[in-house]
Image (cartoon, rainbow, N blue to C red; front, side, top):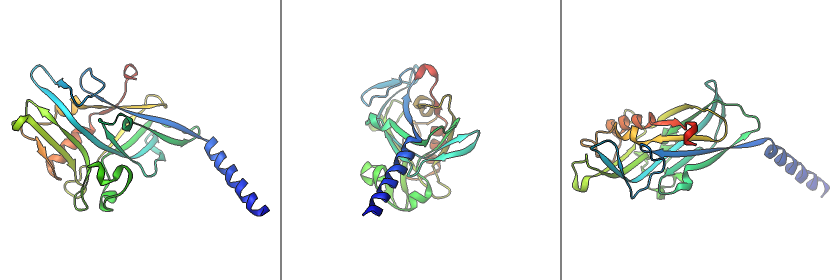
Amino acid sequence: MKHGIFLFLCCVLIFNTIFAQSSIVKIQIKHAIGDSKTICTDSIYRLNQHDSIKITTLRYYISGIELLLNNQSIWIETNSFHLIDISDSSSSFFALKLPQNTQYNQIKFNLGIDSITSNAGALGGDLDPSKGMYWSWQSGYINLKLEGKSNLCKTNNQLFQLHLGGYLYPYSAMQQIVLNTCDQMPICIVFDLEKWIQKIPLDLQHHIMSPSNNSVLISKAAAQAFRICTPCEK
């Protein structure tokens, strides 16, 4: 009996020590089109004097989060899979639990899901197929899904559907992103949709539903549209 109580108290002490020596870093993802920092699915946005776009669906995975100090990895998140969905504002906020006094000046993450996870088949949580981001074990997860309407699209009702993914060569679409953090807490990341969408030839590429070379090219353009918030955007 005394031995059991002793073990219990030791476990409590260890847990409290670990908890006390940890800190929480909040992550916020913002989506911007021009001067707009909040994207609504029922709004039309001007890309320039002539072109406009309406986004009805935007979902994508951020995974494999690491914090770095001068390009050296100092912390890696376990089970690091976050599904960001503009129809669910809470998905744009999450937190990292770090050891206390962790020093870093960069954040590294994947836009999409790695080949090992995709090859493992459908999983749970944010990776659950019910989230609508899974093709099959042959094609894996949809890394990024963009749907909407644009006057550039030569389709019925000017609709477009871009489901970007693929984990097998030569159509591995996951992208790795490294950003310098201006301060340590919180980390605010902007996905500049205007910068990305202007690189998509929607008059030609308005329907992608499987791994392809175009899926890879458009995914690379998306990765280049992520940046750290400027002070005035926070």
